Amino acid sequence: MIKPIEMFDRDFEWAELTRFAGAPGPRAMLGVVSGRRRQGKTFLLDAVARAGGGFMFTATETTETDALHQFGVALAAHRGQSTPFRFAHWDEAITELMHIAHGGEPVVAVIDEFPFLAKASPALPSIIQRALDPTAQRTNTPVRLLLCGSALSFMGKLLAGNAPLRGRAGLELVVPTLDFRLAAEFWEIADPHTALLTHAIVGGTPAYRREFTQGDTPAGPDDFDDWVTRAVLNPARPLFREARYLLAEEPELHDTALYHSVLAAIADGNTARGGIATYLGRKSTDLAHPLSVLQDVGMITHEQDAFRRNRSAYRIAEPLVTFYHSVMRPAWGDLERPGRAPAVWRRVQSAYLSKVVGPHFEQLCREWTRWYADPDTLGGQVDRVAAGVVNEPAARTSHEVDVAAYGDSGTGRAVLLAIGEAKWNETMGMDHLQRLKHIRSLLVAQGTATEATRLFCYSGAGFTSALSRLAESDPSVQLVDLARLYQAG
Image 1 (cartoon, rainbow, N blue to C red):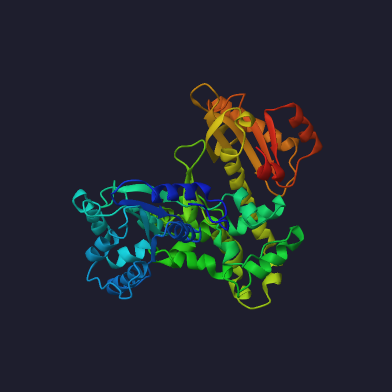
Image 2: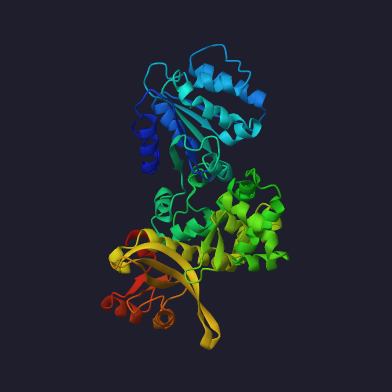
């Protein structure tokens, strides 16, 4: 199968799907595809189904009877029958589906938005399990059944624990968001400064360029502010309300007001459970469930501190949600009135830079260190990157470290390869380097670091000439600007 020319990247996903679709053997096989909304899962699966002459059914949120009717119509159309199938229950429907590869060659069958069907018919996973049992396989044809869904909590449980389909799948594919480098390429933004500012708002979700902005991208640094007001803060454009809809579309999130409040607390810089609880005026123990649910649906991540096992941080996984709570929600009344976006955008610039761009830049620096930095640059192969806090008891203070990279330096054991500081809008100089050296000395005294631990300065505004000269002669000091972040290791 040849990947469609209009499909950007997704080489790995396409290769795995086409491998599964063409897998030899007379028996039916099961695959599961999941991922956050708007990532192009349906586009991928539709392309695979079309390329192999397969069947694709996209479920809707409806009753079991209506779903069976829709499925019967779609399956009959695929089989070239003028009269739709009239299935009384899903046993009949799945049995018939398993017979569509009547020619003996593998045929793809896709059920998209599978959680909608399972919600109306909870027994459906068990019915599919029964259809894949050895007894049923005697009459099955080589159907390659793909179940797809965006409800991450549901899809994650589909193959877990004692679930009926546990151990039945030959493919478990998660379609991720595009990382920051791929996102810049996808949005066709050559200027790294503009690319990062844009990514801090829309992240790596493909649909936000195609369906949500109709290809409207920032033409360059001079066009960025105008693009924000016409494409993101414009109440007539889909991106304007998207952050609200993301929560409303998650079936696990029943009390959306509470979840929005938790996200607002995190967006305001409260990354620990205690800080979130204080922001909301609740007890810390009251937040265990909402934080767990938000994590299950992929809305937030929970990251362990780089230096302290008993400390962790919650971060919002979707940049648009951070942007909404930091910039849009406080000015929602003004933004809903047409023509007010430019004035609001001028007013919220400081909040955008401090609450959105600054933390986002730090996160991209961690991602660059984990996935793009050359091992020679780091002094070893990195396997974990996180932020952390280093205590200095003698001075009764603590120091935040934006980037801490652990890995193997060739000794066969994990060591702290590098620590780094990230400043988006500040020219970094010798004082920043001295701060890193001081933190390294504290970590050396604690037995966490060594004198070989390298020092990284990440800046969106550049570096002083003195620091640049030092870095040229000392490989233990590394400077990472925007050009290096986007183009080199």
